[in-house]
Length: 63
Image 1 (cartoon, rainbow, N blue to C red):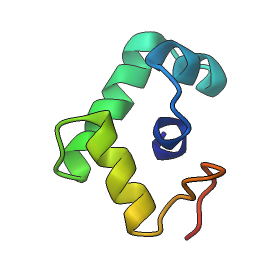
Image 2: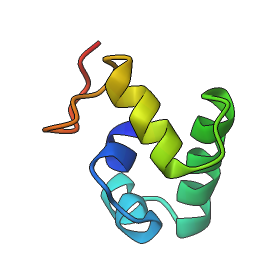
Image 3: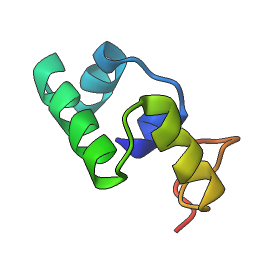
């Protein structure tokens, strides 16, 4: 999910690629935001890239 956020995918595209409903994708996104203690997708993306969890260039996991 976090890789999808870094990749800039919207909820509909994330749901399609994960083969889940849009509401499930929203729920997963909200859980990621809660776990990272942020309020926006941009904040989550920034934390993921700055902490070295996800590549900002490719959106791939680095850990």
